[in-house]
Image (cartoon, rainbow, N blue to C red; front, side, top):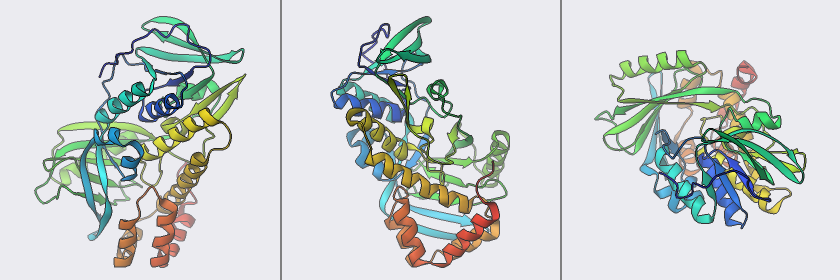
Length: 390
């Protein structure tokens, strides 16, 4: 998608809000702030919208967040999970379907929403650095090979886990892990409304998944800790399942290790981080679309209203619960996962199906209430590892 707005970034406007990075979180921030009546400009280093394709699974909360923009990116609905480990299995039926979305459709849809709200998009414009400037910020850019500067009241870094904005404003770097997946032909015995998950701790402390894009194709993937080992494990798993990769997809995903403050004062201006730049990712599953959009909404509201923000407070609590879950699971061995699956009785599976992953505190308490032995299993996991590998 090529934007109709190709204005030069040179000069800028006093009081303008500049968003660096036309990511999902960046565009949603721009839309939120522009809808509030502020001047907003999004800087995108690429010459136009050609986002890399990636199949993603999100909860139904995504639909309520984005409305019409969500519908444009949804390619399938998931109504059941099947969990596998060491010859054991369990099924979880979802009360509200999960959604399979295509990132290359989502980004253009969010861009149109941002433009309709009044945000301007400047392509082929790379952020270089920032400095205080009177009552705001001076933003140094390279636009189509020409250096220049913009003036902004606030700057939002939505430029990913290796955010240049974060480095320029003094935030420490964020650790990342590799996510790799192969698009495959869906096996004949695999229902198109079912996601399969395999726990293989010898390969990864996370899991493998196969999410159907349609009745014909699906994405089989893995989250690892080392890129080379992760790809080798995925290749072996594909061979074991007798699946041929049609294409490959990959990304570096932030690892949440604690709340990243989203605002810093630079001179008389404010710098914010959203999405992957602030590690707003559920570390239990390394999913970041819904939480990144929540972070974007919170930052957008903070820019418009200033002061304490309930959305960001709630997001911090949500990410903290996922951090606790990941700490408990991260050093599980095969026997622990076998016990975990064995403990998923009908009542526990019902809780897992009724409450989605983006309501983690409520989900955790309901599951523990219905299956108290999971507490002991989780405590054992915490004691084994005392946190994630550093």
